[in-house]
Length: 337
Ligand code: SF4
Ligand code: SF4
Image (tube, rainbow, N blue to C red):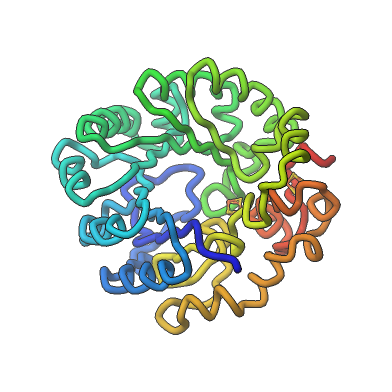
């Protein structure tokens, strides 16, 4: 039976920055939405009953929510809680309060190892300096920190430099993501989005760099199959389950700040709303979810005829944003071409 392993709650879509690749785009004041503390607790408890083991508290910028500390204090009692933040307002006082909530990890968005480039992408002259401050105070208070980096044409030459920066700052994990054509990322996709071969070139360096900097890297969902040796390890290992790879609807769900229930934060297709529908009904009965779980039968294109489809599944956000077909091929995968 599929259980929720990854759960993300976007508690507000309000933000203090205007990043060029943000999935939220430009919001008018009347478009700003927020979940109440009670709604966050209720939906989190529903997810827990479905097996939820880890929750990302996200936004917008989640630290702009008036009840952020109460929300984290609640979720961190029951499961591994990460805060996805741009780090801009994390000073000593905020870090201390976060420690008191029991927060397990802060994932800080970093776009470039070059301060001026990061600031330009984040449209803020202070953005990089604020990350340095946030990392420093969070680590002082003993909160684990990782970087979350959206790969784009602007930082593709910096893969190694970003890992070095993380290593120099005592950070042991970098969660890389691909730019997905969504929100402001859609407006700038032609200028910033990477091609399949550019992603392949970046990942070729990964193995050596991971060892050099003693740092963990991830790039969902096909990262575990990036080299011929790793593909061979997969073939010989029977431990992989169909719940691995892309979690959208298979082992994960996301809640948007207006209560919409989503497959993943990058697939803006509402399956229902927490204010109207219990989570278990969506999780067990929604047709789209049931289709996504049967990768063997339903995936199309290069993902459909890929030997790794059950363990990987391809990023479903890509075909959805490109063609509207959730089950189509992940056009940025270089493995089964
Ligand atoms: S073709 Fe699709 S299923 Fe196969 S490795 Fe690439 S993304 Fe994953
Ligand atoms: S659709 Fe893409 S971004 Fe969303 S969970 Fe799957 S791999 Fe991750």
